[in-house]
Length: 360
Image (cartoon, rainbow, N blue to C red; front, side, top):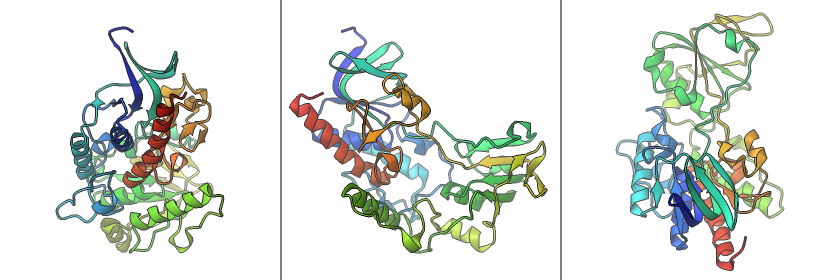
């Protein structure tokens, strides 16, 4: 083994919330593991979010395993900065072995297990957990005329605050929580038009992430047990908009009235099939993200297309590979703080059972 090669029971790729949750349970299981993180500082993608972003649940319902998130003074719903600080302190609290910055470029089969490549360095592992999330892969739909637009186009991943759009005419595209929260503040500094593919649906004002996670958990358990999945019913869908205080205020002043999705983009704005046009200076795409899976393509070719067939959280094609934190397809609400912990617990239990048996 070369000087720049390392051997572990488990290598975790990604040091955000899902990777840290996995690390917590691996530490409890006394596994020999390392967490490789591409970022230069702890906190994952929470360091990149705009300043006014708020969680959908109070701190006490947004925890990773083992340690309740402290409340943020003066705020019922914690800010992104508070969450990033919590994740940083969480690493230290549990002595998690995070190595950064390490950008993993490929995972492949090797004698005795898997090899995780990062430039000239290699980590050998009996199991690999991929927890790279979605933030580095923003999605923008391919709307006709997009390349012809003469104004500014940006994505949620680029948004830092309203100052960059002050005084402009901005079309905000997307019907989810990010779009609603951004509009709530952007509409105070710019002339905004909200465009969605379906009419936006607001959850009742007394419903937040606590209720949504409980619903998602019940649905997951029903499907797991072969029972008919419970519907969300009057609460709407899990992706509907949570009316955090600032969103409620914007809705009450009429800033969150949405138009249907446009059909094409022109040099000066957007246009609908009925001939209606709207000139604008900027288009802000709040249209979501895709899983960051390119590093897994050498191991599972379909990863290059952004999807891997799973049984639970394990790859069907390579059972020594586990995926955590990419959304509901890797576990109920697994892209949330509390959901990441619950999914990681079951995944690590399976991995450590294999390790104990000397399997795979």
